[in-house]
Amino acid sequence: MREALRLAREAALSGEVPVGAVLVAATGEITGRGSNSPISRHDPTAHAEILALREAAAAARNYRLEGATLYSTLEPCVMCAGALVVARVARLVFGARDLRFGGVRSKFQTADSSLLNHQVEIEEGLLAVECVTLLQNFFEPRR
Image 1 (spheres, rainbow, N blue to C red):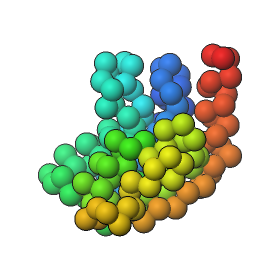
Image 2: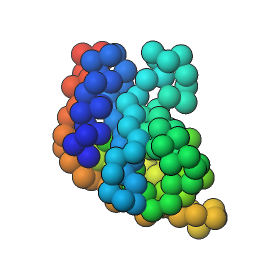
Image 3: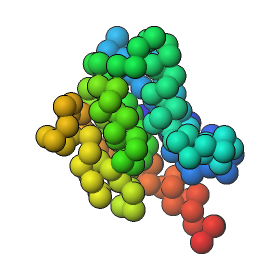
């Protein structure tokens, strides 16, 4: 999660919403990293989680990332939560809830829905204070 926080800080320095994500393969190695960059990439899907999944899938040469854990500083949106299910990620660990767009706990329960063919194990609150503070410090001067 500390690496995800570092990536989130990089995003903030670039003017992006400070969200970072890392994917750790079943071997324990970080195989994917991402920081929010939809503004700079002109891509609405360039969320930190999606970028980490893309990098890890390319490294694995497989779209399925079984046994992997994704660490994200913010609760994933519905798009990202759906991608975790499609990729068969085993576990998601996130820091802060996203009360406006959260697709895992706050608004929807996409990643571990019994309606889908795969359920992601979810843990929340890891380094939550640091994750929330980073977001608050980013948005405060903009409001």
